[in-house]
Amino acid sequence: MISFPFSRQSFVLEGLAQDHCAELAELHAPAFHHAWSEEDFAGMLSQGNIFGFIARPVGKPAQSAGFVLARLVAGEAEILTIAVSSAFQRRGIGRDLMEGVLRHLHHERAESLFLEVDESNVAAQALYRRLGFMQVGNRAGYYETGQGRSNALVLRKQFPEVIRVP
Image (tube, rainbow, N blue to C red):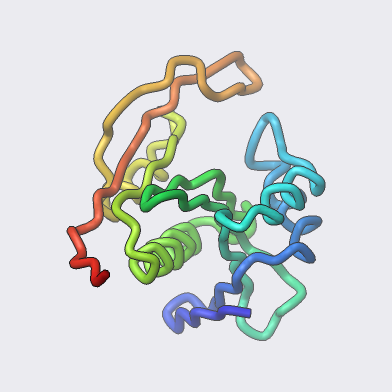
């Protein structure tokens, strides 16, 4: 278990494992029109290049506040999904989750991180811009919503060049 305590928020991040799949599906369902199932998460977490974190309130190890799932291949990473429970929104958990991913990618010497964000999700866009993401594209009709489809902005964070030791 990997834990990153964030004293300002009173939450800890744990590395994702197969036994988190039910929690992930439960957190994902209210956040997305097309929610991923427990089996979807189990399949992804069985892949060696997929990682993520789950946020829990300090002292409440059975409660989950949010999670992030990412993939790293050949120096290029992608946020697959991120969700924060409505009961825990606006407490910095999304930022903490993203910072956990960024720390992991720094350790792995990744070169860049991509993600898609709904063009109507202004709060998430503001967070990503504060974290250094820049828009590099647009995917028309990418997200299915209750009112039809919405566009996704494709964002990228480029990491500083690292000196690779052979």
